[in-house]
Length: 346
Ligand code: SF4
Image (cartoon, rainbow, N blue to C red):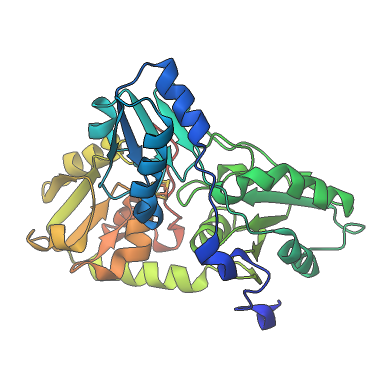
């Protein structure tokens, strides 16, 4: 492990945070406007980039025909699963910034906004955690949408160092080779005992390690400039604690998320059909405030798994994934709890 370099931001994009230049691909947007003879254009940014919205709209106004109106989505947005369908229906061109497509669509212009952090210094350090390629050359490679633009280069880089790199596209929810989402790790379903995850944050690699417990997941985090091995023990302990708390629950709130790429209708229906003390609750954004007035003993969230696992403790009552719910009502052994994943689109 190279914990000693954790926090050293000099070689990463973090130190450049304030002068980081994103490529908003204005030309491609203007092309779509002209092609469709559009007069209304919707712009949707993820939370971290919303403050750039007005500036991007100004820049577009300068280059687009005069009669075009630009509108900004104010809806919360955390993924490509989360499109502002209201604005989409009312505009001729809809631009979604910050994520690669979850599903290819002619009516949406996706502008991914890739990270400009160089991933290779931290990949070099991560080699210490991978086996010598002469002994075991097989390694899987996965990354997030942010670093997707360097994926081929990363593959070549590992191959030049003697590794046989295994990659795959995952399932219908993933449009890019080697890409993982916080709710889908199908691209790590490859014949190798080690997987190198290049990307920031702990959530993705923990999910990856839980989905593929037989593999060692090495994290090369170019954003925080740190290498580590994904551990899921702590995460599992927290999940067990939530399930225990929910075991005595009588009244259950079953959340169905109305965001376009987060709805699991059948799962939600099945729960309410089989439990007369369960109530289906529909909502787009799932927040503690919105649930506080419901007099429930526990909740099951069929929407984004991150809300359950990352934000779970912020809710006033235990919040479980559908699999954890089965454990809480005694239909599944506690030690068979799995990471909650999503496999469909819309
Ligand atoms: S459902 Fe959640 S984890 Fe999956 S892509 Fe959407 S925001 Fe990310």
